[in-house]
Image 1 (cartoon, rainbow, N blue to C red):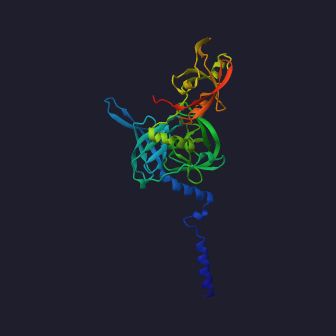
Image 2 (image 1 turned 180 degrees about the vertical axis):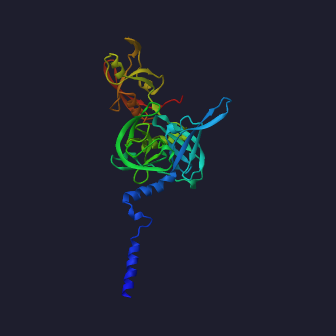
Image 3 (image 1 turned 135 degrees about the horizontal axis):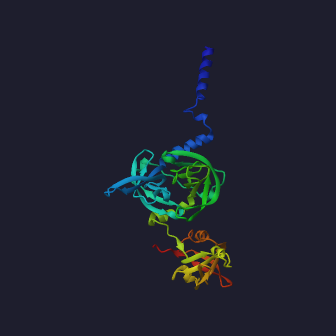
Length: 354
């Protein structure tokens, strides 16, 4: 009897140490990865960009011209993705995690930040939604997870860390995107537009680019979540980002120095748009054209050197100081006129929609 009692006790204890679904064999980090994947994957979608070509008899021949990733952020089927994923699409097809497919409608796009908004009309119980986190709080070295559809392989999870912050990359239209997150999480073609998640499963970035066309070499880039949060209201309401402007046509003076003109660092105002903010503030454009070798150069305009105390030497510097603000904001512009240094307060207005 004594033997059987101890045998039963041994079996009970042994059963308590049997892994449930193998979970206890996983590290804490692995369990966190699984938890985040299960929590987030239903919000990640595949986006197919369908272009329409025509044969000799002008019959439409739909063909997939590319695909990427997106993620759902609202119960009304609002999807965030990259602009280059949906660019020039005749038709968008969105595939959810349950393999159902829905037509996508392009709601808004911002080529300058390579972001776009797509909407689908799908039942709310067929997907989950992701939340944004504050990308100003992230630090180099923290863990990140990337979800997407690399090479068409759907619902793929990769992990890594934030490798660097504040990188600058070129958007497809040539404009510089600043404040970019660099990560070593494997990001490959097809991941574009997918979420970069923190360890809470919240979005801190939108995967947008890789180094090299063949695939990940340990260097991927993501647009910070705060950039998306800043422009999303405009994309949803207007379909584009309403940006303030000065109303000037500037020339970086570095180009003038390259052809032998002795001129201070800054932006030479070649032209001021009549009635724009710069015009109302009294800034002046070029008054004449001078010939330097084989070049004709606008001359006599004010040279902007600083905005709110920050040096402004390039077009990217100007965009960073102006386009990140709102209509009605005021900025202090320091400039050189002839040989005198002065400053003026300029009230920003929205750029006219052409």
